[in-house]
Picture 1: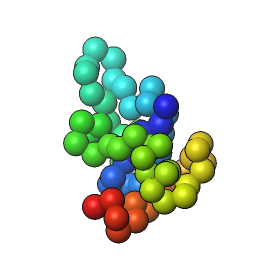
Picture 2: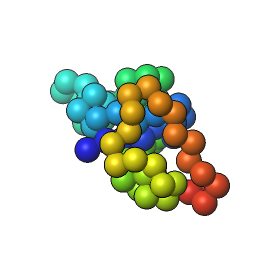
Picture 3: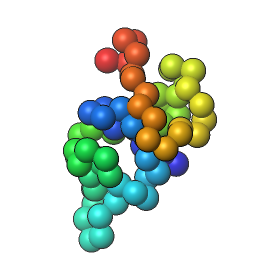
Picture 4: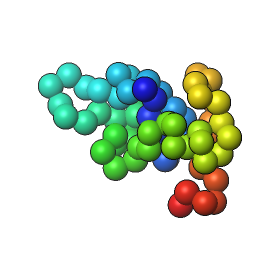
Length: 67
């Protein structure tokens, strides 16, 4: 499963966000908090007609209806 970062607008595998021995991690690209700044990718993808599997390094703006 992928998580989307609301700060840098990139999606990463959930496992890339995790930090050993901590409940929440940080974005592998910009370093912001997983707890405060993520949305599950399938929600973003469905709302914006994005692919089921995001491309590595691609930015995906949220669209006005989400925020």
